[in-house]
Each structure stands twice: as C-alpha cells, then as structure tokens.
Amino acid sequence: MVNSTRIRVGRNLKDYPLGPGVSKAQRLEIMTKVTTALKTFPDEDLKGEFYPLEGMSKKTQEQLINDHFLFKEGDRFLESCGLNRDWPSGRGIYHNSSKTFLVWVNEEDQLRIISMQNGADIKAVFERLCRAANHI
Image 1 (tube, helix red, strand yellow):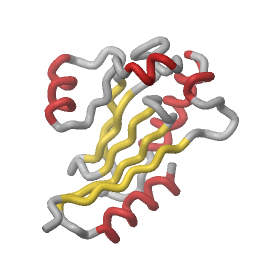
Image 2 (spheres, one colour; image 1 turned 60 degrees about the vertical axis):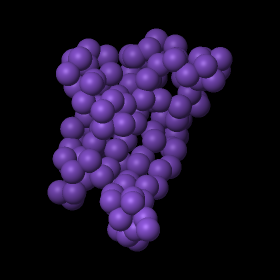
Image 3 (cartoon, one colour; image 1 turned 180 degrees about the vertical axis):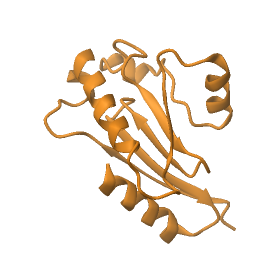
Image 4 (cartoon, rainbow, N blue to C red; image 1 turned 135 degrees about the horizontal axis):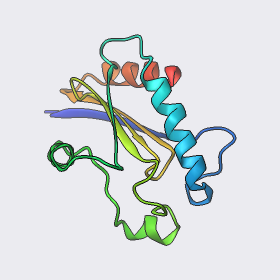
C-alpha cells in the first residue's frame, strides 16, 4: 500500500554560482527572478503563494513547520560549507493551495522543486513537476 508519492529535484540558475559561492545580492536576485516566474503559473493546480523567510510571522512559520514544509537554519553540513550565510535573507518557500506542489528558494540548491500527493499516481506527480519546472 502506498500512502503518498513525492518527486523532487534540485535546480540552479544559469549565470549564478552554486550556493556556497552566491553573494547576498545574488541570492536576492535569484529569489526575485523565481518569485516573478511563480506568479505567472497558468495552471490552477500550480498557483499558490510565496512566503519569504525574512519577516515571516510566527503563525505562518508554525503552520509551515506543522505541514512539514519549512526548511530551517542550523544544519551543520549547510553551515560548514557556508550555505547559512545571511540567514534568512533571500530565502523562502512557495506552495500551491492544495499543498501538492512546493518550491524552496535558496536552501541547499537555488531551487528545490517538489511535487507530491496522496496515493500512488506517480504519473500525475511527475507530470505536475515537469509542467512546473518547464514554466519556471
């Protein structure tokens, strides 16, 4: 019995260094470019909201933690390679209204694109992920 299916990919934008080498200004540029793209999803099942970590309300933070969506500072491996610099500036999370599609911005990779849903329909999960990644 399959409870849920999840597919996730890490992506990095052309013309930017990987996470440990990205500056605060570049991280903010990446976040702006990605959030601009996220606002233009034509498909209703991908439309949602972006939550920047910087300035996030406690209520929103608690909800995202309870949903098991929020990534946090403190991972010793991310710290050791410099990925936690300027925390939480330039970082955030996007999810659709049904919480079957997420994008983490500037956590480990510049983008972590995640598609998931209850059940075993891997084709639907993969199709959603492909549509979203191609659009972004």
